Image (tube, rainbow, N blue to C red; front, side):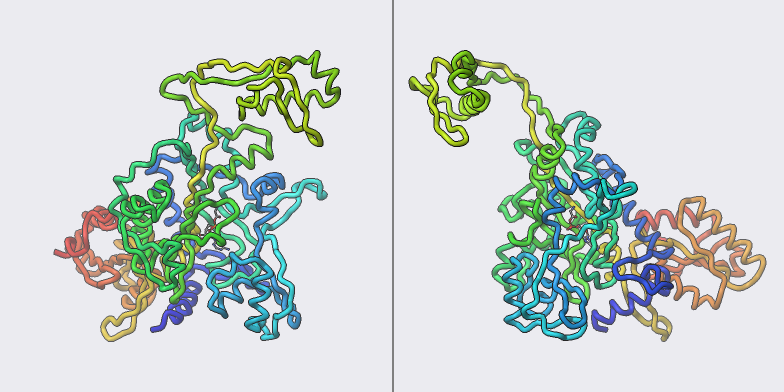
Length: 583
Ligand code: GAP
């Protein structure tokens, strides 16, 4: 079976079994919007819960829930208005819009056209005589434009207050930093998480739910003191990872680096220990929720590829159809966001870091003689004072001579030192204001969901019949157990309903099914990835036991009804194996 066939079959299964499908299809649908059906919504919720548990609860971070529409100044400061663009090329024949960098990447040896300047991409389109993917018309000579990906709207009537659907959940965290800092008792490091929708007006949404216009992100913004201690890596140092760093990509031999987090941080492959820490956690978490680690890697961004805010970034990538797709990014955002919002809002976006012991420092100050500066410089006297203050803090030696030279806007002037009031005094300080740096693990939930389904897709043969099943991890499977009465019989049905109620009370996700023969019911649950099925038969009425069947092996075990919920809960938690139950 080719990998392409897996995607095609998965798309059919997703629609048939209620995982996901195109939205508003009764009106023809529109590209880039999907609805998660009952199974998909449940799988997505379970993945989000698992993420919340690992990255928020277990790490001691705070979760918030911010609005999805934000006013224009937020995105002026964040840089999204200016730079959150993709390369748009319009076909001169059919008028379809396409991403020029994607056309280049799909049809030439260039792997990272997104990072190239527009004139270079235009030159490649001409050189390779690239054509419109929709109608094959030549695109050489067509202008490529920047297209801003944000959805714009107006807040309230009229257009006085423009707003935008947030293109990342992160900004909802950054703008609240002054308040969040207080909740964290002004102590670094601290982390804030958010799971929510993000919106991007993608030029050409494609590949099912992999590139959509509305999607869910699970993001952690971790605020650290740039001069603070490194993280304790002991819990992740032995985690094995497959890395694709910049030098390996530039060597272009496709070689991955098999290493451990501890070694990769120690030898500088992963420059920032905090990024190393989060890659280690993510590697283990992805495996736990069902990403096949043999089809998974971390790839470092090439310098031209990084977002406007990032100084380093590693993507988590999963292999789908023989292609690597980005499912999360781990970016070092430095102080970019907090400094920009401080500048834009006039608020303080720093944390006061108290020293262990008060420190004595020398401070150079000026106290200019205004009775001299006023008559001498008139309206420029204020600017002279500002310049003297700046000079005192940066270059004390400038005050060593008889006069001090400073540059005003259009002239250089000299002031006698005895008119500047220059002095150096000792001062005791207890701490300083620090703008934290941000480490950002940013997960795409939709792409994760797609990966988990793709990596779980299996075909085999059972009793001479072909079978399709999803080998989903019990922790995230949308339905954990299917309960069936063997036949349409009042007594069997009553017992099966009682078992359903019992299992639901125990907190398990249960479906009841009495339609069709038992083989067909098993196939249905296999296809949605239900890990266990329970069948109530006539013997059950005699021995108070039921047959439990495991999805992947199709092995069966007889379990007393009185033990059933405990046994299934232990299987779900991974405390018992099915082999153990079947003994
Ligand atoms: N705050 C950082 C940020 O937004 P990003 O790499 O642009 O970084 C993070 O997005 C994740 O969001 C990606 O790794 C991907 O999983 C998901 N994502 C981004 N654009 C998407 C789209 N158009 N459709 C589905 N998922 C998307």
